[in-house]
Length: 193
Image (cartoon, rainbow, N blue to C red):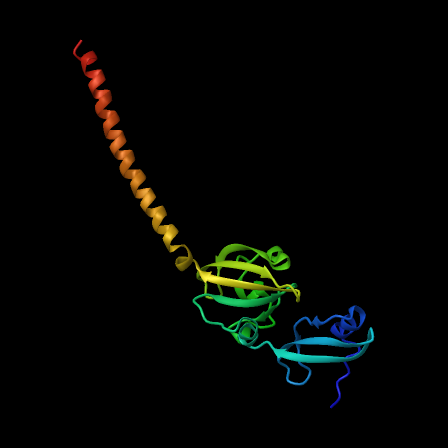
């Protein structure tokens, strides 16, 4: 069948700006699956004569693989729209759901998602502590959000912290013993009086 795009916001924006547009995530009217549309105006002598458009499915990590060439690694990478809707996630059940519903309110602040920068420590979708970082994409109003297990990210720092605490305790006991011995030595003559 024929699909009329004239009333779609991404089409109107491409016509108005004469620039390529990446649509907000939407449900396909044909398959019902989440997708995004990329539409590019074809210019002839300064006028829009046609459009070239394509759709990208947002299921699982397909979009991440398309953008980055890989989805391998110990962490997780997802795309989030400006309104907080998950665009791409390794778990297809999370796509098109609010990030706060999936990750909890502690994972990323709404400000970080809108601004697309910053990092935080919170719980991932499995309840494990994770480090989250957000970076705004240049050509779409989306934010790439990476998460990495807290223990793996900060294991070296935790080890240094634990060693520093142990060393501080040892130095405090040693210093306390030396100070006590010196005090006793200086007080000893007074006690003989």
